[in-house]
Length: 408
Image (cartoon, rainbow, N blue to C red; front, side, top):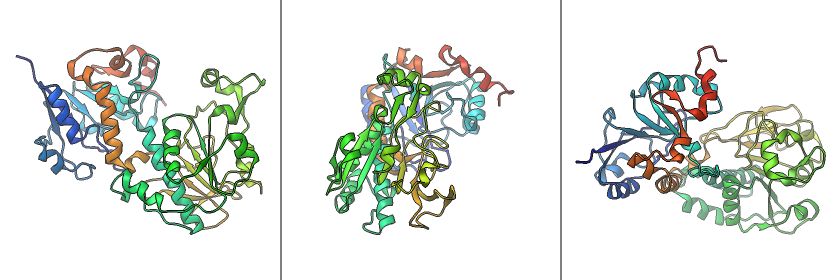
């Protein structure tokens, strides 16, 4: 007789609260039909975007104690006090870059001989990620940029994204606004995040123009433009731009972003930034009278990174602040017309948790879940396994000093 595999859905414990789930109630039912040897249990939660009642309605049992579960699935980092020894955990751990704020959690997992599989490192053989929330960060981040513009100019009002029931309601509200002025919106990046931002902007019937036209032409209608690093960086020795080389050696490039600051009204950042990469522009550049950007929707949210006005991450509850470029300080949002409005929420998909969760769960079901539930040690699962029985796996041995008590 085949052994029953028990899977627990964790209650999110990170603060500020995250309402997303790794699998929706209908997805759990679909998995149980595909894999009859599995049983799913859900920790009760009063903040989850799918209510306890929605799980119960589909006869998915709620259970506070998940001690007898084999696999435990969450979304964000887990409270270190709740780890069950010897279990398999899968969530976004944010430890592989030696993040200090998660070090004690990581050490606790090692001490309790846990197997840690990190969503971020579920990749194809070519290194492409198979599960991510990036598209949703872009979708919501661009919306927040437009919302900030509406408040700043007092020309239109948009409901906060987290107050919308779902994406359809958010986009329906967006279709009602009119962008009448000669607005220029710039999106950086070419991946999931940036493309998600472009999805939202397309709802407003913005005209997409080329980088060259964006820089050199005036338009009678609002326009948008998307640029990758080949448009805002150049090799220091003026060698032809090569994206693969840029990813490996970003320190060999310098910024040529400054011309964009003189024609852009709203900057929406959806790029990936390496700390070795050049800054987009400086604080001094932001004091120039020709610096035109009035709203920065920093989806990438690299604090002390390429956009100097990103001083900190903001929250869903309090998404905006003002950056005074002349004093180089943060001030209350919309306190001065001359300030630059900054949106730098670092968990944007949490504003549309039902849609984002359903999309994420579908990606998970198509990629990693079959191997996880059947116990198949596939290359994908192996690549994403950071700890096994509390020990670092081969690919993550570089984290040994991070686990060590003397690491600072």
